[in-house]
Length: 306
Picture 1 (cartoon, rainbow, N blue to C red):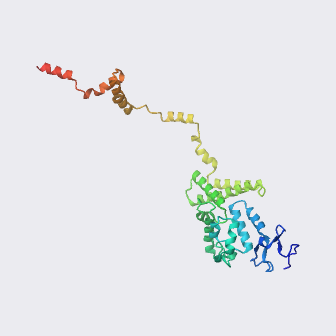
Picture 2 (cartoon, rainbow, N blue to C red; picture 1 turned 60 degrees about the horizontal axis):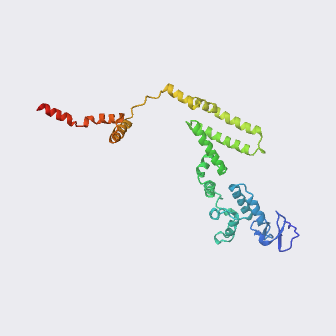
Picture 3 (cartoon, one colour; picture 1 turned 180 degrees about the vertical axis):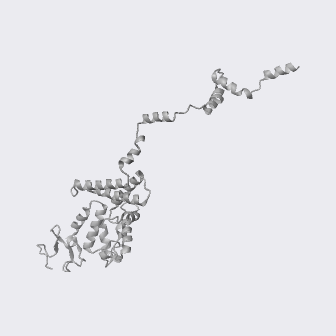
């Protein structure tokens, strides 16, 4: 391998990315077997690595960029260390490079890589859970149901679409569930195509929509059927009241026993105490009559006996 020509001074290295001559302290040590041993430092400066990682559009993209840089540096991705430093690149590389427990580890020693195919699936799922893209999602169950290769946001979207379909249409058997699952995938493809119009044409989106409609027709779950069944209920509130009055008239008002009790024995009693003479006091007197002793009637009876 021919040496890279550089106009930099001997104690400096020219970065292959920004093409600036910088001191050796601005470069990581070279442990990548693909580079010549004549390179003591990897010929890409720390600033360029940092800028590349920070260009990640979201947390997942940021993580994938970190993994790519670690592969170039031949350094491992240790999930526990990554989570402890809150998943920040500039805080991660010092302990990985200096702590004795990580000495001699290479990228192949990353805890999400394995040669065992059966272990690999569980390891990848555990790693996704440890990344905490969304603590409210059971990623392990989603990977089992939807398959591997989707981001946390995509798994969340698929789950939301599944809930909408399950709540809007009946799902009597496994066959219907599989049709709904395929519709969820198509909805995801449509959403991705619409969010990236440069790489998707209108005809491609139309084909996806047509495929979705065909699946819904085959399953007899067209949107027009779902809305038609509810057409009678989509009426104005006034019309709904009239319908109730015609079909089930409001029953006549029943005598309110509690109101009569309060008016007679409470309000009537208070009116009597105030010396009033009105309808309430008359009701009060009438209600108490069976329980009242009339001494005039008693004296009259005694006089008649004598």
